[in-house]
Length: 253
Image (tube, rainbow, N blue to C red):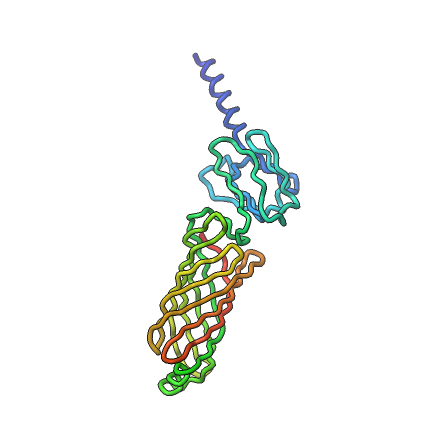
């Protein structure tokens, strides 16, 4: 009976040891892992000796090859510039996913995982028409103002084609160069397309009153940092406010 039990445990251990992926780095190091996701720039996995541990992310250029538990192999080194990975066979029940064509670089997380993209914003606002007249009369403010603030952005979802739904909250302080303190708050509901172009609409509140803000923009990405550029228009009081804002942020989940 004891011999049968030991034999069963030995076979079970062999099956478990086999049901794992082997990740070979460019420097020759081999790791026993469970590969969870492959993107054009990264490989994400968990160590099989610590399955409840943190999700580990490695640069794709640092990974030479992955040998999956079913015996298939995939060479990765030097392929990071490809627009999308080619799906490789995986064992039944595997949760490994690949990046979809059209996805904005660095935005390959699961479809319904919330992602935080928060960071500073700076730029300027130009007042026109009745808005400029009211600002001069009530606040003695010139029609050109600098803006400083912070953007709180949450990505709510991402569709298969890379289109994402956004919720943005942008508090700003304007007029500091004129010795003024003019706060404003923008709350935008937006959509970001597969190529990074985004559009947002929502309420704007400032000392001159409440209105609707309309914003368009795009983001550039380098070394894991996003650099958003946005142009916004806030109509009202017989004129409008035109703002151009720049900034940077990093991804948080």
